[in-house]
Image 1 (spheres, rainbow, N blue to C red):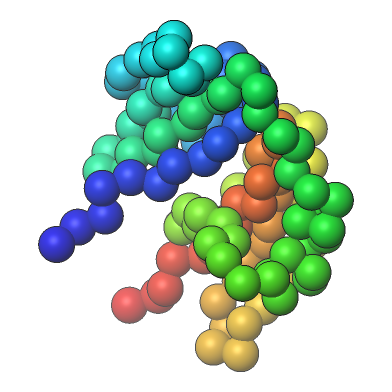
Image 2 (cartoon, rainbow, N blue to C red):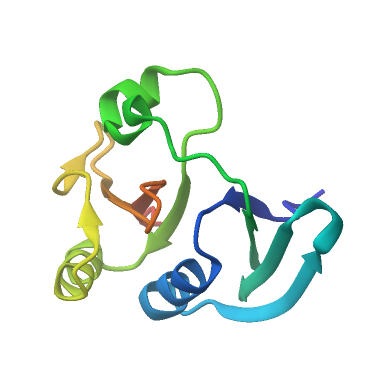
Amino acid sequence: MKLGHIALSISDLGATVEFYRRNFGFELAEEYTMRSSGLKICILKKGNIALEVFEFEDHQALPQYRKNLDSDLRTIGVKHCSFEVDNIQAAYDRLKKSAVEFAGDICTFEDGRRYFFIRDPDGILIEIMEEEKK
């Protein structure tokens, strides 16, 4: 078994596609429109990772409590996607230069691995995690 894709409901397809292209190197692989339901879908790919981003004409904004990292993580449900990087400091510095919204600074797990969170254009959390050293 393998993961098929991660799906994100978003408010602005163009801004989201550009965000993932510019900051993570995803490319637009497919586009669909379902006029009957007011839905537009884009499939973004990078290597073996696929993101499905979809925009409903009548979407609802992310609730305020979900914009706070601590309260969101304590709420049951899917929380974020995570991308692993070789060099956490280089990723942090690169994203700082691109004016991405950060949800905190670099933190360290008890096992020594480091991570930080950013937000996409809709405030959805994305974790940037240091790859495990082998």
